[in-house]
Length: 220
Image 1 (cartoon, one colour):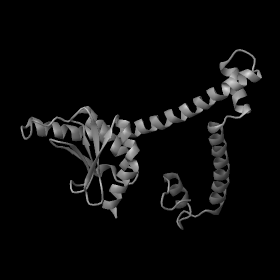
Image 2 (cartoon, helix red, strand yellow):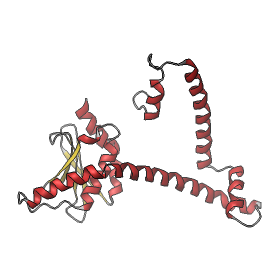
Image 3 (cartoon, helix red, strand yellow):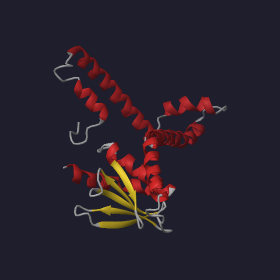
Image 4 (cartoon, helix red, strand yellow):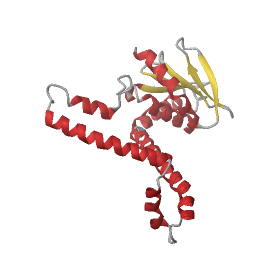
């Protein structure tokens, strides 16, 4: 177990060793279950990398009406591999989408505040776009791994869309979406900005490590 990168599931298991929860029978049962779970996960990982003939033969009769000849098995080898990996990718995407949707209501409230700010005439030149809000949601999904959701906020400015943690003096990044070429502004330890061109909003995920490192500078 990597103590610097503990997963939520591992935290739940560690709680069982606390004095108030300690139960030797449950711990032994959990250890046995984890042993088999990890073994199955290892098999699934291997199958996703290089499907075995057994798993290929399992799927063929369910989707193919002909005989499972050697040629057919070989043809299905790549099909099964692609199907497994696409299924895993879809599962990850759906979980991310579900997590983002849970934050939609709070973000709508924030968006309404921005709209009210603009409608009141304090700065009518600023227009918060759908892309900026989608970019905010992506950054939020990244930062939530180490930060508190309620503290991840944004402020739309004339020249950029700022995302910060708890207060504006703790910027996470800036989104420059006002031109045809989009940029994400990453900040170093001295809060100096480096603009990096991105082609799609998904490119923001490529900078997850940097964004989390920026957050850590404020948490330390």
